[in-house]
Image (cartoon, rainbow, N blue to C red):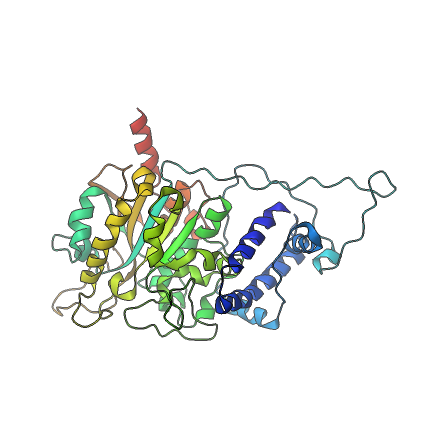
Length: 446
């Protein structure tokens, strides 16, 4: 029973911070979650059902967020992609399952009154369900992940790099993953893999022009869900995210049934994979933690206010997509270089990074624009993009030639926080770089 109290408390707290439009979107999106939860309760999977927990909450045990069901939820659920099965955080202690909900409880009916103890027909009270204990992180306790558009491996890290701040200033401070490759050139195909272990689909490989066709059901967990269960904090900082009036706002995404037409160079939902998961939309996690990039500087001032995991995504222009910047300004990789040169020093000088931080600069998409010089041959491996790890806990100027991909990124972050890898990230062939930090900690202690 207690397992469901924390999500309910999160939903109530998040709802209190929403404006009218955001609250309406939250209520609308929760319809799909309602369908999923009811289906889960009626499946007879055992344990305390979500519906029973909600019914007991309504009886006064704990306040609950109530949303009416609607036929539209079924249609939205049918349009969602088939997810790869997810697993949550690795529990640090045993969890005691309660009795399965009765048919009456599953239908929302009040259960019959139980006679007081000692009278005929009385039953022993059920043992309380143990709350999951916090997961234990390793030496790294603050991870900053920056996702850009790749101009190609050589253009990023080669001798004539188009991102010189990355290749010549940061590269000597960290470890270069020379064989980090993407699953596809599209941002969302890699984004879904990196935060939830989900396989690319035809829709995600097209960056999901129809928003509702890429929405994942509430049962599909993300790294953000795992971090919350493990009692860690997370935030996604997305540049340029604003409402229809141009005011900075949280968790911005297209309306169901609408096609997003992003302003050139500005915010685009394809660079914000968190807004595609009902597990984050329906209980308010997205509304609370998916925020404009302008919030980052404030959060970096103290280690206590810095999230354990920070996902940082620039605008289309600053991510490095060519043809997305205002005329007469730096464009493509040059724009990404200037953006990194301004933002990264703020992270590296923060108390959280200096104490136990890891900065990952990765490429989550391939810039689809043609080379400036038509005579320039295309790269032999266009999906090979490389990635850079920078941390005070790593030996600088290192190289790791193992094969990594977005699943590896998720697996590595999960393992750094003591969590079970999700979906495809749990595959036997998926490599993790988390062991490098265990080795560095052991070496430091010798």
